[in-house]
Length: 290
Length: 178
Image (cartoon, rainbow over all chains, first blue to last red; front, top):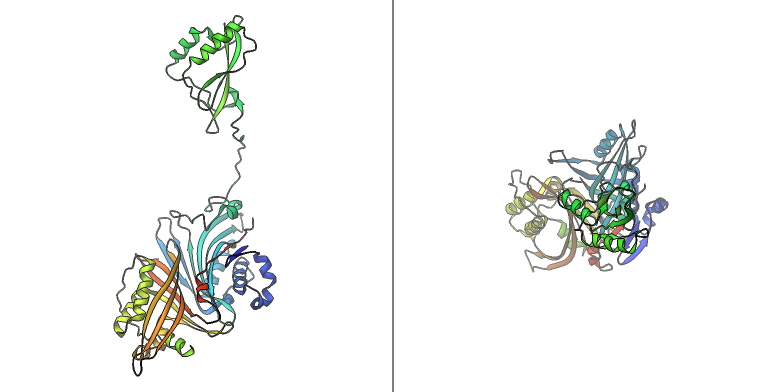
């Protein structure tokens, strides 16, 4: 965990804070020990969270139905714990804070934080990922206690901002938290802008613009064909990502053939470039000139 | 200072059971309404104003920070708080000058921080004035087309620690387990 505290940056982790928990009130951030305990205990079946709240604490949850309607519930600490235990009948529950915005003075501390929750089904292992925003009020009342907690699950129509869900912290759990991130079963080559592909390796070959007769006329004008035969010599052209044609391999051509091939290429319109993995790529074509 | 604190927490209001809710469309409006209600000298007006901006089962929490190590708090519902402080406005008037405010919010929840300069004036006698800084934290929810306070906590400033510290926000990044 990184604590940016009054212009001082301190690197610390919740697990390190746990080391101080036995003498929490002596640690430099005793209210962080409480937050640590809350998230640790709420992620464990055999640990209670009720004792972390003040006697008159209230927990409010705002969730949304599939049609977007708001559902608001208010719980005491023990009732909230009972709710979590009901959920644990079918799921293992894990929750961690992501970004915590903290303000405090004396015996009052507040946290406004984004939280990642995982619900792992006990039978089939299916995992549900949830994002929520949670607002905590902490007070000193026989030690630091949570006095008020409001939990709002993410509204699909209003994603949590990147400031509260930074990629640097959350890339490991995927971009879309509503569903478990899955590795693609299809492997695909990464797009290489410098690679020149053969027509067999692209998803769509380059296409000359206009009616087919236009290209046929161009071929006839310069005595060029697309299939090998005994009277024509091979050469290659390259269709760039932007559709421009360039003359490439001409080592088998005579001087006169090279000049004719140059004129052939210079007479071309701009092609529709080849497509691979939804991107325009460079592609070479073999042609034959007389 | 101690006397001043007890004065400040003794917001004497009586709970009206049939107050009409005022629809306030921003958290800022609710906080403005809170301070306006806190300054209102008329009992029935003040009570109605408070009940219009608090949710059901809301919480009110005042903290007396006596020094850097000692503090006491009074926690309870709005109704219990009002019952305990019923005679206050007969003896004192309150004024609030807000110095600074900040807000964190997402969708239907908001957390508002407000630093205010409070002036308490005796209504009778030599009209002695007491002044202090207070930091308020409001938790609000948006429900039924308007914002409501679900919990408000406030704490007084002490000489040994600048209360401006309350408005400095720390940002904590927590590395997630994979």
